[in-house]
Structures are given as C-alpha cells and as structure tokens.
Length: 491
Image (cartoon, rainbow, N blue to C red; front, top):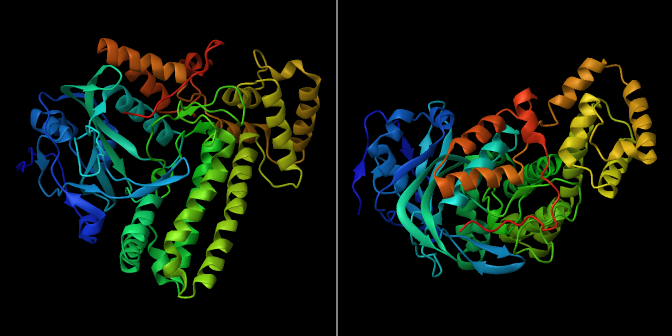
C-alpha cells in the first residue's frame, strides 16, 4: 500500500461517501506507481475552484499524487463496478483503468469526484493493462474544457501527467494519467449492475445515495423513486439538447457512458460536426451509425429506459404497475427534449417569444444546410452578424425565401435589433474545437513535446462567445478531403 502524503498547502479535503455504499459497488486498491511522472498540463482555474493550490500541485510531491505514486491525505482509492449496454449488448464492466481517489469538498461545500484515469490494472480491467496513452488523455482535456466553456454540463480535467512509461497498442505510445473531476461517476450502468448482480436492497441503497447527492428535493416526494427517475430524465433531455445545439457528437453513448448527474462523460471518439448532416458519424467502431448525430436523442431515451428497468422494484411492488409508471416517465423524454432544443434554436435565431411556426422555420433551415452541405457552426455565425460571404446557403433561392421569412419573424417581436444580435451572440459560439485544430494540437504535443499549440487552442476555446478577432482563424472549417475524419476510443 502506498503511503498517504499531503504536500504543504495542497488543499486536499476528501470525503469518501461512495465508499460507504455496500462492498458490491467497488474494490479498494491503490494506483500502480509509474517510473518518472512529469506534469504536462494543469488546470489552474479548476484547481482554484476546487480549493486546491496550483503551485503545490506543480511540485514534485503534487505531481506524484496526480500520477498515482502517492495518495493524498484523506483519500480512499477504489475502482467502481458497473455494467452497460455497449452498442446494444449488455456486459459486466467497471473501472478497468481508473481509480476514484475520493470526493473533494470545495470551500463552498460542493462535492466533486477526483478520479485518476490510466492509473493501472484493476479487477475490472478485462485483460487490459489499465494504462492510457497521452494523446487520448490530452484530447479529453481539450474537449471537456471546451464543453465547459460552451456552458454544457461536463466532467472536467484537472491535470495530465506523463508516466515515463510506454503503453502498447498498435504501436508504442507515451503513457499518461488524466485527473478527471466529476459531480460523480454514477452511471446508468451502475444501476444496471446493481439490478443484475445485486439485490433490490442494493438498488435501493444506490438510489438513495444518488438522490441525496444529486437530487435532494426528490427525497421529500411521496413517490420519491418515481420523482428520481423523472429528474434524471429531465437532466438528460436538457443535456442532449445542448449537444445538438452546438453540433457535438459523443460517439459512444453506451449506458455506462450516461452519468446520472446529467454531465457529459467519457470523451472517447467524440468530435464536433462541420457540414450539417444528421447521419454524421466519426467513431471508427460505429459502423452502423447507431450513435450518429441525429440519433443521439433517441439513444438517450433508450438508455433511460434501461435505467428505468433497473429501478422497477422501487417504483411499485406490482411489476405491471411499476412498468406502467416507468413507461409514462420515459415517454415524456421527447417532450422535455423538444422544449429545450426548440428554446435553444429560437435563441440561436434571435427569437425571444414563441410562435407555432418557429419549429418549422428551424427545420427548414436545417434541411437547407443539409442539402447544401453548409457548415453548422458558421451558418449560425453568418446569420448572427449578417455576413453571407463563404456560406453555401446564400447562393440558393430557397435560402433567400427562408431568410425573408426569418426576417419577417424577427420584425414581429418588440426587441431591438441590438438585443436580437446580443441573444444570438450568446448562443452561437465563435469557435468550437474543430477536429483538425484538435489533431494539430495533439500532434505537436505528442510527437514533438510542444504544448504551445495546445495552450493557444485552449485559450481560444475558453471564451467561445467572446467573438474576438483572435478567434477568427479557429472558426475556419477544414479543407475538403476525400478521406472522412475518423476518431477512435481512447486507449
């Protein structure tokens, strides 16, 4: 066992509430030490939010903790057990290369999981080495921080540490450990695991824990487990709508990658869409398009149905009544999602009030964008600033007709043109983590140990609604290519 160690003034303040669940849900063990850890990236702002001293984290002792070579005082490392439907097939899973150190209590009293990803083998490694390569860990750092800046609930990245050890995949790669911060790592798959390998008492213990931690108001409800199900559904509807509004494609929406707290989690083969096409898939393993951009709301609903199945014993003693209750709640997902999505689309188009024709106006625009292969992000930017140069749409008469209807719609509202533009600017990002820019930063860091490209990208992505001149070059889509862009699960 590694010894607990607390570098001066680091600010670690751990609690370990998850470790107080039944032993079924985890295995206690320490991270596997690495040879020569070196800090690659540290998120100073996040460290401050967590009540941590960035200078102490940069020290040799602080880096040792972020690498898993030392355990901070108060931490109680463990690997979490869970299951999941992976591309529709149910299987036993668990933290195969990650360890939860514990829960950091911030100065404001908030609670966040601190997890080391790439920290070595666990009982759930399923034959893997439990390690992670530098490229995928840097990718998660970039995308998760970009998502946070876009205002989308997400896990975040505190640090990336290189291990001084290679990892072997198709080739030899540089090893790394990512420190991930999350509201929690409770997943739909955690409940599936409890329902399949535990008892109804285990499911209830997990549900009670999740409710107390994330949905405290549901505890007061008469039918509290039904209220719990409803709140999880609402959060997911809001989350997926936000993905769709910025063109984010998760890439691997397995049930073990859906967090109960409503955060985006597990950035494997994720990417952002360029030309608008609902069938867009980047993941190399999603050959059937199960997790294509346009399918994400439907997959979310499917995943939530699996969550509801795990909760059935808590919803009603009569299984038929429990199923009926669950079905009623799941059927409401579409309504919640549509409300969030349409509200967001109205804002992207500068529309303040609701009219019945708004949804059709939005869908016609998306249809034109699809037909003419228009860039998703830049089309809305062009509408925001009235700049049509370089946009595929203005050259077609259909778009001119749509534009006239949109302008007529804006004139029917009382808000000034200045307020309309302000609304659009606050909902249409100037930049997203364009895939070619992400790859450019990763290549410089991984192949040449040059982090300046990544640091510049992170700075630009930190304020996506700033619309500054410095962001203009990062808004340019990639050059046309005959080879489709492909992403891979982080290994």
